[in-house]
Image (tube, rainbow, N blue to C red; front, side):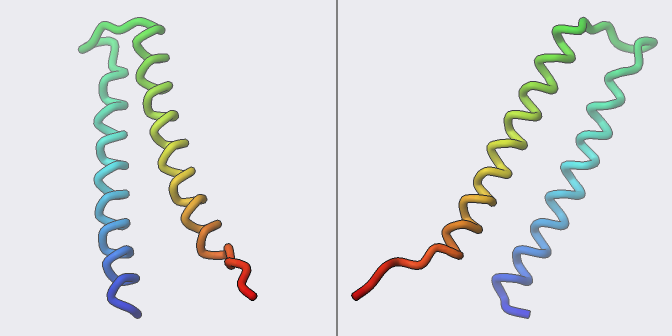
Length: 74
């Protein structure tokens, strides 16, 4: 496996694991016994999270398209 692939896998696994743990921590805030929040609070949180996920996925998709794009040459 190439060094750049190894780095990607190592970092992607670590960052994804950390992200999933942070999402679990965010879900802990849903406990009404400990926290008070409104529907608007929840909407703002999930709009922000979904927006960032869409932006991040778009960056990956753009990178993939650029790999497959071949420049025209004479």
